[in-house]
Length: 312
Image (cartoon, rainbow, N blue to C red; front, side):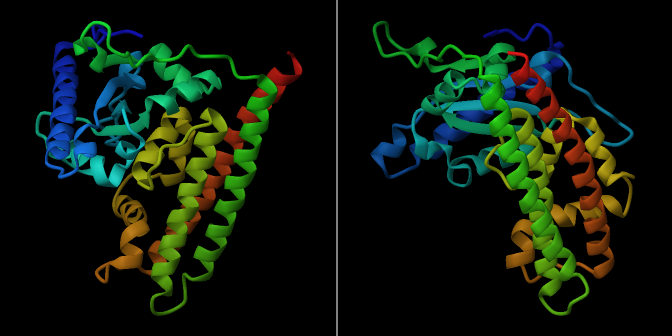
């Protein structure tokens, strides 16, 4: 794995270095404040930049406001440390508010055992991270000689037939979820009372299921997040055609998407959350379009995987 950022300009190199510093410092402060000796022993083993900024293929569209974010894999020592709500939401919030960070930062957190199991299984997502990523931090660099090393496993090739079978299972299962959530969401649009909030939540679930369908069908991996904006960004990086579902990117539609994003929590728990049949109808229509585009993308991927399996 590379350990240099020479392909980035100096401003981006400084930005990545600052992100690395914030992640390590913020997490260490949280762990040190714990009353549990076990929690205080948790640590980051490795920090890897992956995605467009690692490959040198980032984009920044001033017209639409869409841009690549910084994607980082955090490899940690204990399974408990992968709990995003307990340990990492505050880290992401600090990065989001930091004036020195001009891009969104997305973190995925896994144990070394999870990463190595995925590599030995041949999962492309993790194999691509290790092959194309940039190692920003390695705890072994400061470890004394002779200590146990957190070694990353060699990646293996995934059997083409198994790759097709897994992808097809993900595609079928998540498409069924998406259709069910969408049907329930649409059925509640014109009902009164809390039914519109139920509609908003179910429509969020439909959109999330579609994005998970794409991620799992194409990469066999989806992050443990319900954040629709982050899932959307990951999927549009895989297939930019999916962005058509939310066009045009202008008022009031940006607000309508933001309401959909917030619905996972607020539509259920916040008395201040408000929506309307007009907004819900727009969201349902856009989700139907998203499903159409995503379905085509997944079928293309499955056709490629099936061809690879037949040609072995």
